[in-house]
Amino acid sequence: MSKNLEEKFRSFCNSKNLEINQNQITTIKLLQDFYNKNFHFSIFNIFKKGNHKKGFYLQGGVGVGKTMILDFFYDLISKKKLRLHFNEFMLNFHDFVHENKNKGDENIINLFVKDLKSKALLIYFDEFQVTNIVDAMILGKLFDKIFSENIKIIVTSNIKISDLYKDGLQRDQFKPFIEIMKNKTVEHELIIEDDYRKSKENQNNRYFFPLNQESNFKMNKFFRIISKDKKKINRSINIKGREFLIKEFYEGVVRLTFDELCDKNLGAEDYLEIAKVSKFMVIDKIPKFDDINSNQQQRFITLIDIVYDKKIPIAVTAEQNLDEMTSSKSLKEPFNRTISRLYELTSSNFNL
Image (cartoon, rainbow, N blue to C red; front, top):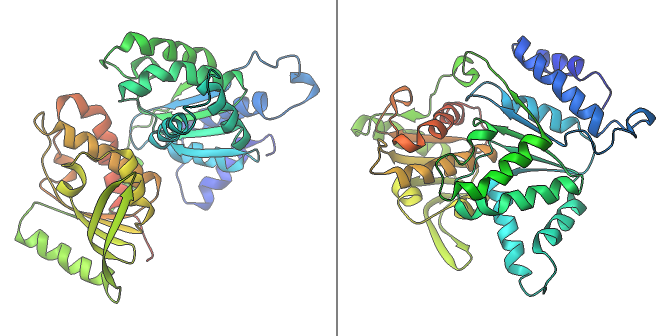
């Protein structure tokens, strides 16, 4: 990548018909500096080695273009790299721990990071958040080792570093991770007034509400069109000995109810496996959310994060309009991201 990232970004935005604003340009300039210090090696920064920050943490509200900017930056990096959903990354870690539990006294984190370094010198986590106590307790040691091995990290999140895992169980054990991230990463907030997902002539044409006969009729009509001439089978997915059955599976076009996906004891691991066999997903009967069904809402947030990350278009039927969707108190902030992503996922163009 040449030095002038801003020039490339302006050309990129023009080619995609995207508006450019000063806040995005400021972010690009910071990324240019991050790139120069970490990837543009020269005689002048040999002496600076080890003193610069090895992570870039881009924080901001939903729909401000964080992912678009870091996707653009990531695509220009020619080094070994990985783009992972954070849940996917932690599942990989826990699987690695399980597979190497008989390795004796050698530190399992050191082994994992050594293996990681053989695959990537840059790791990109989109929409970073921590909700799991097991992950929270291990992240400090894990990321300390990642940075000490000179692996670079870029991150988007709608949560400030200091607010990660806020009000979580045993948060004191998470504080070392916060300190590591503050010391080792450039933290920058991207502020833009409008959610670009809602402003781009978004027709929202695959979101049917409320839950009534008319919405059901519209969804059935739409589903007949996208599943036409496709063979229907019962698709069974085995997830570490657990069976998940998709009764309406049409060569990658999948139809499931909210309850099938979120009212069972499913998690990121299950949703990742479902996503692997899905080209298009229909989710029926999304309810109102409140403090009573917050567990189901948390699963739904995880599901939509993974579906978005894997770029799977969707159609849904729901009790409420997107603009009026309610939330449990504890999940109000992360759910704003889910709503924004639902706008995009139910409006994006797709080919089957």
